[in-house]
Amino acid sequence: MSIKIPRGTQDILPNDISIWQYIEEQARLVFKQFNYQEIRTPIFESTELFQRGVGDSTDIVQKEMYTFEDRGGRSLTLRPEGTASIVRSFVENKMFGLPNQPVKLYYIGPMFRYERPQSGRSRQFTQIGVEAIGSSDPAIDAEVIALAMTFYRNLGLKKLTLVLNSLGDPESRQTYRQALIDHFKPSIDEFCPDCQKRLEQNPLRILDCKVDREHPAMKTAPSILDFLNSESKAYFDQVKKMLDDMGIDYVVDPNLVRGLDYYNHTTFEIMGEGFGAITTLLGGGRYNGLVSELGGPEVPGVGFAFGAERLLLALQAENVKLPVNETLDCFLVAIGDKAKERTVPILFNLRKAGLSADKDYMDRKVKGQFKQADRLNARFVATLGETELEQNVINVKNMATGEEAQIAINELEAYLQKHLKR
Ligand code: HAM
Image (tube, rainbow, N blue to C red; front, side):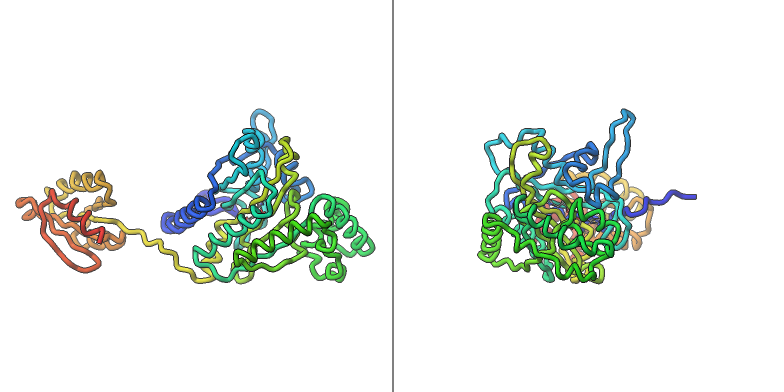
């Protein structure tokens, strides 16, 4: 029996790769405009990093991590997200001491979560994200949100909703936490086992439980926004004002608590069209205690990440056509053995000159070679036959206009360079 790909993973085949490369290119472009630099961290880390960083009581740590022991008996985990790793690296490399603050980083790479695979949810997926570490200016919250919106809009997505909330500072959160415990306690027996555990561990998470969404106590739950102390409220107001000033629309949803433990103050998600329903394309927020939790000084941070696979689904759902036509500058067609041989150095010279070019290697007839040129979207086809070979010339055809010319073989490169520019 042949071996199959693991459940919840996918091959990205050559036919689909140009769209991935395009998205990554566009992301790098906006990151540069907003002055974020790339960081690459390992795909596995100490398990403890995610237990402490993402939080022991989260679904990710409790149910979804790919954890294994290596041959040296260390517990390692395939990274389920990027933030904890980036902050680990920030601390380990003492980036808090750099003159250039805040440290603005971005990353692109695979993440791993043992989830039930379905459309838009897989076990290996690609996150593209940013982390701005070192500043507690609300303008940096607004900046990362603006960056995300700019990226999606540049690609051509229109049906986007930015959802915003504030979880406040630890003090606000503590009073809110108690209010939630008091609110849910009388009816907690009617909730799912996960929520019953969450009541003491992390009552905020009850608010985004999918199972108990319709329970009456959900609708009457107190709102975090009524528990923000004056500093937290002022902070949130400034973030909103800056978004207003940039003309970025949002809706405030006090139930947006996010699934990871490190958040405080601003949290946000961008919803879009997805697999037949509105879906979360991107999530992020502020994480002021995370750097110190992972052994660094008291340094604040904010960031987001989105799944590239979900972005592709949203582009499909909105019918956005991306400008990703793969073309070849020139395909060489040879008629006869001598001509075939001669195309080898001609092709090599075109490539050395920086052109993209190819030839037949399957002993195709002339018609078949032209078909191959078509499949490869060749912009020019250069044909060499016995007679041309004797006269040291080659026939060139512009495939878009049908225009043909006979030129000296040693002028082929210059001819193509000139005509490809037009
Ligand atoms: P998250 O909400 O867990 O946040 O994930 C962010 C995005 O990753 C999701 O909105 C979704 O697009 C994608 N994603 C997550 N799980 C899957 C999956 N199983 N299959 C496909 N796509 C998935 C974080 O990971 C935080 N680190 C974001 C952040 C950065 N917060 C601050 N900085």
